[in-house]
Image 1 (cartoon, rainbow, N blue to C red):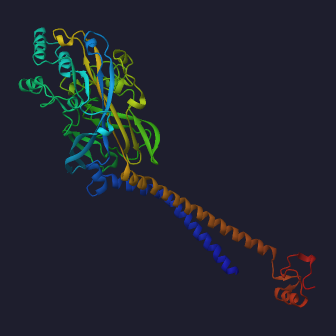
Image 2 (cartoon, rainbow, N blue to C red):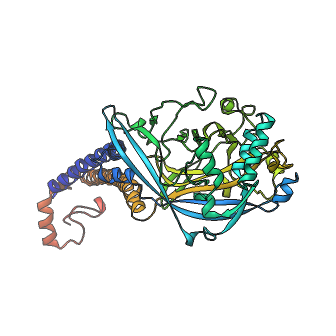
Image 3 (spheres, rainbow, N blue to C red):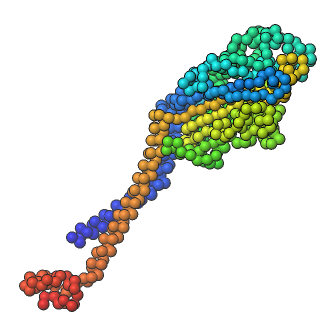
Length: 510
């Protein structure tokens, strides 16, 4: 029996030691294994069938929600009063994204054209595309500002052209016409006699050049050679830097194409990306941690300096000519039209902008943009990019259509591009990146716990055996052998223990 007990205690010690060692190894090796699998699965490679397919044909539902600023007092605006607007929307469009002309290069980069298509979603919208709204006429009021420094005779001629084609300072059109284009004899005239003056050669609409179009030729890193470069833009339309702006820093093409970022992000990481629609690189900063369907995330938001002018934030000096902070002048990449981008309702902008227009009420929840990203993989889980399109307008002498309009940056529309991971993709994401790492973590600590328990059991057995031995240093009791004690016990029917548990007060064999 003693020999079996000894084997058991030795076995417990060996098994416990092995489990502790194995569990400890898992503590250090487990994260390395997980990180290695993340790297292998994120690389842009047709061999990674699932991730490559998701990158090529984005399966996540994306929507564009459009809000119009319906002008309530156009006649009063022409007389010099403040514009009064009411927000109309959302008018929601499902956005389909697909990459085409995909070409891999020897330097671990890949080129592609990303096409976008929009489909109206009546069930998610406040109304139909047939709803009518009134907004400033970009063709008239924008052209007037562009002609401000032209000779007076030229301005008179431009005004006469507007009258000929019956173009006024404000448009009352359906949502569908304003979005995707409407018939205009003036547009036909300009495209025929002044080709290139307008961004679109067909119907004129706010988004006519976006539907069924691509965002330009992107060349990005695949991450095969260096995972920290994955998705970062190598060039756009063959350019490694822009020419729209006035400083080298502002002309830099930074970050990714805006869909994914390199993995293993920290709270000090930022989200830089290049936006062809904004004609510049943008950068979001960390705001807070969060959880979506059990998946940990970091929320990134736009810093207040994103659209600040050069006076308030020196690095933005190259984006000027500037107006108030909160406005980005995009005229240099929009056919010189006096267009400005901002956050909706002039959120995070100079408060003076709110004094010029009645009916604006900015809040962070409704008008701030954000990206919720899984820091370990760089995959966005929930995205909401909100921007506003504004027209700079004023009275221009010689152009009668401008009347006595006060100088104002006039909101026209704002839109939100949003998307989120859900359904089967979210389940797979949660299983692979939350459940499995958690199981591995539990397993490693279970091994350590069981190992320590086995070692403690070994020590306890050893201690018990030692106590046993110390209590009976020999097999004799008062000079009698254990065999004799048993015989004596049988002979005299002694009721005491044969091992003399009662000590010398109970004589053995008597």
